[in-house]
Image 1: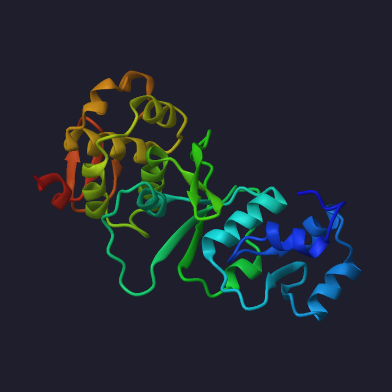
Image 2 (image 1 turned 90 degrees about the vertical axis):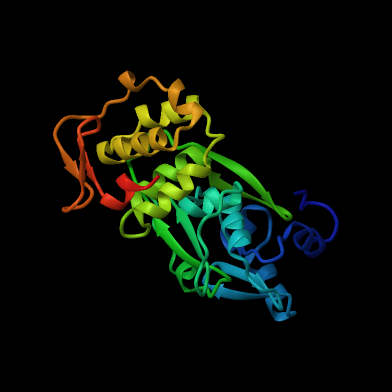
Length: 255
């Protein structure tokens, strides 16, 4: 944005994303002084949400626009993940009861700002962070006038498995796995080779094999470290010798 010429307010309004925020540190870096920002506030253009965080008067904040503006202006990498990312990619099994949930992933070295937790969005935001995925696979999805950082479907499903059973039911996740006919084997391979959660890798491979996807046959399982020793998803389940894991009986018997 060229802020050295023309009317600064007009340029700012052109840059502003409906439903998004403006951050004082970004404004200062782009030539908007504290005095000028104060003038805009007194004139009724903007109001402070929190110290250093502004919104346009009369605007309704959008979760997607807020995350987009936060990332863009402050160089953050908060992203839509887990089942929310799958929904954005066209895979939708969940039928929300009440307010829909939006899963937001963020780097482990970051913290969640209080203002992001306090805003009453159209979604209920739930945050998660993990070191399990060593090389995160993220992409941009266009959503109106802004871009949203999103987990690719292959990673999004792994994130669902990571968050189960607290956030997701195993059977619900298998119903989603049945839909994932277009996953890219090379991306799945890379993610599984660089994921350090043994239980998640075993469960992912079992579900993919059970679903009978063509891309499963293209995986080189010998290159994926599945660890040693038995693991349990549930106490009273069915043990799978091939993957050394005990899974829910309902999942095993489902056809």
